[in-house]
Image (cartoon, rainbow, N blue to C red):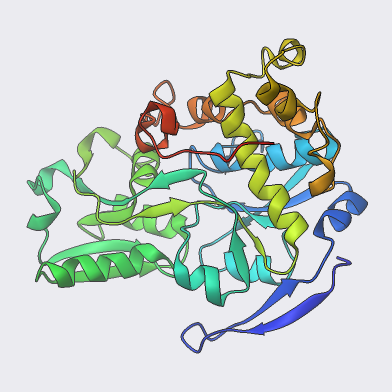
Length: 338
């Protein structure tokens, strides 16, 4: 890595020392010829290697979109699987260029780790999964239960808050690695599994008997999941941020991987600015003016990515819900390119 690093001392609560990029992450990425993306160790629908070693998922597609914008090649990316405990250090030290790992954007993470979150590529919330044989229909019936949870996560903190606020007791069963939590719950070492609701739907598919488990209705937290970069490099921060916005704007404007070449001839100025046939918007983030067209051609717009990774026709079967565009009752909203 060639970028310079500046030390940032973290709050005592974290007990870490972070580093922030002072400049030119994009130059480093271009020089080595690929993007190094920090990802989950294996969460279906978000980031997981298949039996051929190919990575798939909504977070994976975000990484591929960044690579496509830079290199006109969505495959110019390498993935570094990271546990929840490892993820921030890997980004802080420059082991990865960007972290796209179903990571919740919180105030402490945004202000004390030397990192910047670039947006929200999936709005989520924490839930609970139980065996149907437990005979409960609400999280409010879980007092005294043993709960499997991954350490080093907002999940662990939210769990404590929820039980405390509702005057309930619980016995935490804590593990560092996601695979360890999955195995423990599947082996009946705990009554309850808690994590982001999207993760519960994913994990249920991996259990020995998925049909014997149910996700309870309560959502107990806000979990805005999104990419993060090191502080101190505004060009890279802007680039990663606008990759996501380009995919949202493309969906809103009806530009897809199937029609992107045809849409380059559009007379709509919004489409023309998006696809680089009008204006010089790529220059401000260090890219060619067809940067967004590259993303859409190789990866697709946000809706296409959602549908093929976690949507209703996938094994996870997740509805768009709050992840629908703002114009369709959801929270996904992108500033205009102009």
